[in-house]
Length: 221
Ligand code: 0O2
Image 1 (cartoon, rainbow, N blue to C red):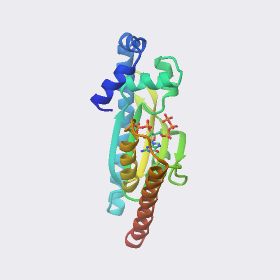
Image 2: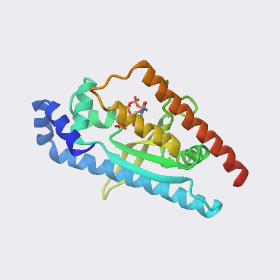
Image 3: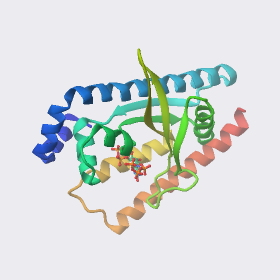
């Protein structure tokens, strides 16, 4: 979330939430550091898989990896929106997207190759999978979402942290990024016609992925 948005959220956050954040700043700093470590763990796993695949097949299945840690203000806002009390336990139990990783793959098959390889690792536990590629959302959104538990090893303890991983192709990412930008212009109401146009763009991006995948299968294994 950018600084301008943070400032806007700041204005909405009720004074009690702000007071809580100040009072629990030390716990929150630790918690956020643990989530950051969990992101680093998963990123390393993804980079290793990418490297190994590139050695074996002479191409990279992963194009880009982007990570983000949800801001503390967004965390308090989401808990409040869901009617949950502001506690460290509730953040860990009920928020699935504090640590988020987006993996942009070259081809659709790569999404599943990387996801399956990651999920087969014995220290990764799948909590939830949403396959919006096999079953796109009504607006046309496509991506594979995995919610996993990953251990982080601290000096004196092992902590299990949740990480949300979104895997998608370059074409899926282009559509989702642009749709996200349009959707976040909150003052603007989408007409039915515009929603249909967005859906058509999503269908075009799905067609592009399908055709590129077909070409890839002819060129490389
Ligand atoms: P942002 O700003 O990207 O973080 P939960 O994650 O449990 O709170 P839910 O509905 O169970 O909520 O999660 P879901 O559907 O698995 O996905 C939530 C995230 O997926 C969103 O986070 C987006 O990043 C992405 N996403 C889901 N649907 C769409 C869509 O229609 N368009 C786009 N562009 N992205 C989508 P946030 O917090 O909404 O947004």
